[in-house]
Amino acid sequence: MILDKTMHGKLLIFLFLWAVSVNGWALSDTGNISITKLASWNSGTIFVNTNEQKTTNPAGCSITDKYILSSSTPEMTKSMLLSAYIADEPINLVIYGDGCDQDRPLIVAVNFNK
Image (cartoon, rainbow, N blue to C red; front, side):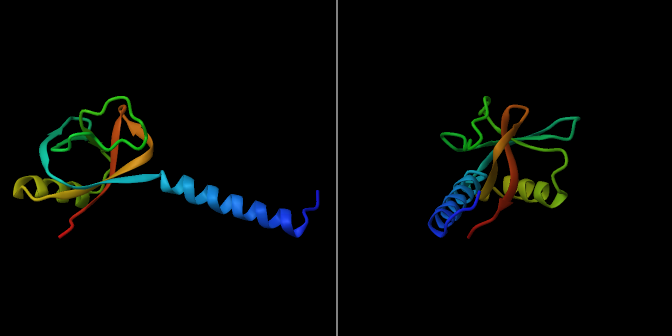
């Protein structure tokens, strides 16, 4: 099938808009929040409770009482979470939007904002 220039242009615009909209749903951040509890399990996963009224949940996970940090998370990320907790400093969590871990929202990155 050969596309004329108009159809080809429309197709490119559609693909661009689709890619931007899909990518926009991939990650979501919490803004500056405080960590109220950290819990570590033998599996290496870490559960993170915060002071948020409503958990950021872009993937629509079924359990939203806390966030989860995968056992494969880099040590630097774990250290930043622990530092924020101990110092009682706000931190920004970046939550994965395309899936859950143990049915909970998954932290994929953390940021300190001043």
